[in-house]
Figure 1 (cartoon, one colour):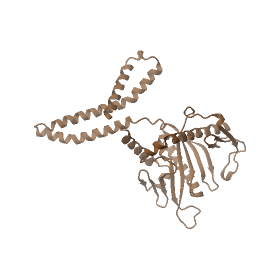
Figure 2: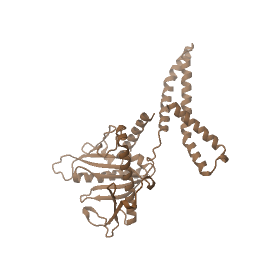
Figure 3: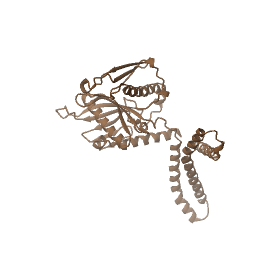
Figure 4: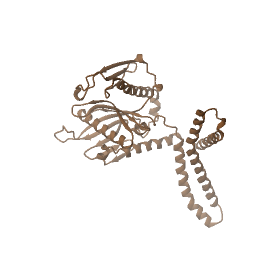
Length: 355
């Protein structure tokens, strides 16, 4: 199976090289650009295949020396073979990674929704803590946050926060944050010092373009209202906030971050497109998703993915068994170790299932 894929990739690379060696034979500049990009994408893979072939040849030559009569050459071959096996295994793994199907959603912007679950005021406070954690990490890695909607509480937390993460690869980086985040700590309102457990749900959706999902204007009910602050107090006397209901699905989205009604409507539509596609894909693929549920997890919002234990300064990701006693640093936006470990685990499982 792997050998067939390697031969196919090499053959296609040679075909593209031959065609591009004579640009006059290509009908137009658009086709020329397309072929050039395809060849450039294949080139690193072909280089790895050549490296794989080289180590494989050298191993075969070393094994042939083992059957010879020269003791010195036998000793040399026996010493080389383990090293060659390591090189072959490493380059084969890299080739398999490069052969994985491209993640078309992974390069997109992302929409993240953080909502208070069980735990009342404490859960709402933790929504704010997670929002700050993600914002700091997002800015640290050079991406941008664009707030869409927030429902603040009187004690400084949020019932929910919805925002967009802008930048190439945003969804691919944050997709595994979907799920239930559990917090264990002593609430500020707890006089006895007893630790409480609360929960917050996070959903991460790829940005969806209009061509990917059809939404008819007749299926929408659009309401406008004054944007509000903590406790429901009005912070804007104009009807700039927008609530959109998609009647067939029952999905409701809103945006009140901008002072412009048009901008709020555009942001709300982004969320609606993303949620509607998630709903359609989820219904179509529920059986497949269950069958292929991975170590990384299904991303189901009811699934407990991570626990933040404040008394022990501990964070545990239950999907990959990673525990760090650096909760203070993680909450300050140092989330990279978890993000990278989850991405690596997902990729490792893809390698096992695809090839």
